[in-house]
Length: 120
Image (tube, rainbow, N blue to C red):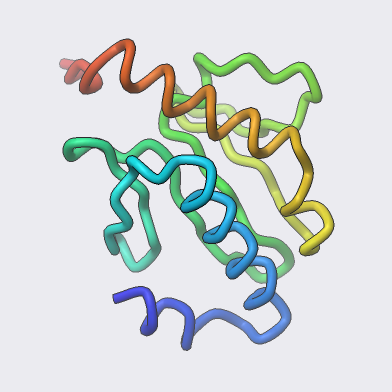
């Protein structure tokens, strides 16, 4: 449940989490909010498209297909096979239009590509 996640989020990051949640819901209303691995994940027909994870000194807005997203503002970080994330340190950063653009692109990518292929 989101309320449990939010209750366990450090107070300093609650406004950032709230703003990122609002951003996801406004930008990609087709995504369903589900709690997985103790954090809100936003899914499309099952697979996760984006997630929000509070860390000790920032909040991650994570993209499961991050490696395939265009990132002209160079906000995405990470070195995993598919996942990338943006470290968000303030409500001001959460309102960055580059995040909205990444969300739109992530949703478009998932709709176009369908469910992710299982790697073997």
